[in-house]
Image 1: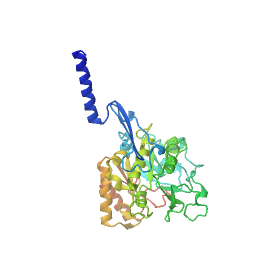
Image 2: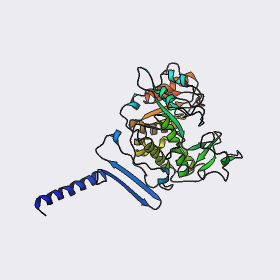
Image 3: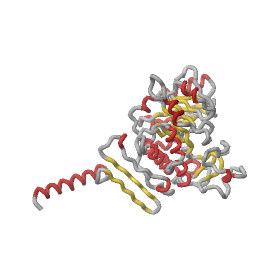
Image 4: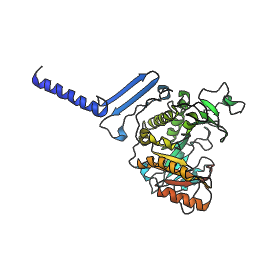
Length: 371
């Protein structure tokens, strides 16, 4: 081997070693998969491309082990947060009695809606209807999020089978899938789910007929994920009695997997978990989400929360705010003085505020706090 060739080879090996130390990979794109027992971890690192061009490795439900709680199955897929979400200065949240014409005439920058007029498959909104909601002559396009419950199943949704609780006792029958839990006594027709099981996750994403695909097809700009705090129900000392130690990590994994799926072709696809703000101590989770929604931050109805509770909630929400994420605060209050106080406190924290009814059955415009 001549000296020049040897020097060139030595230089190549040195560069490869430095790259491996700095990034954990030896090629421009390194996709490594390691299977240990039942835990599976997939990592994708792409160098030298912009956020909008980022390649994404998707972990579908069948590739995520139900016991993969000791390792992170995904690397956080960061949103392309360069423009559209930064323009949001107001939002509205309505799930029932939706009148598209009324919403179109409003001045809200962001709308949170069900993907369907009445929650059923038959009345799901079309791409043209969602596009009309976005269009605002002379203004930047309005953004629209689709509500999606990932911690509970709902018996009025397209995926529900009446045989799962034919006796209407709130207890799953033998015909029910293994992921279905008992009903939520506070919300009739809602059932707890073992959200880490592939059967439930397959309904959410990963197939052409999944919930996420319906939402993406309609042109929504992102999803508003509810019942994030289901990990408290299934986790240690939770009401379920299951005492699943991995429940918290598995919720983080699920949200990250949904983000990956939504950002395959649209890197700016919004991910907004509702509640469960304690997950802010997971850095990858905070990086992955576009923002967070929080209910009842200062008031539970027209009753003020305990100062200690408020302090703890705000400390968790600050982790998202400090990371540059949107914080959407919704309090269900009807007293005018309390509404004014709520907006004042939320705005002082840099949060976006919306006071409305708990049934979320109307578009509320609060006097003095118009969008």
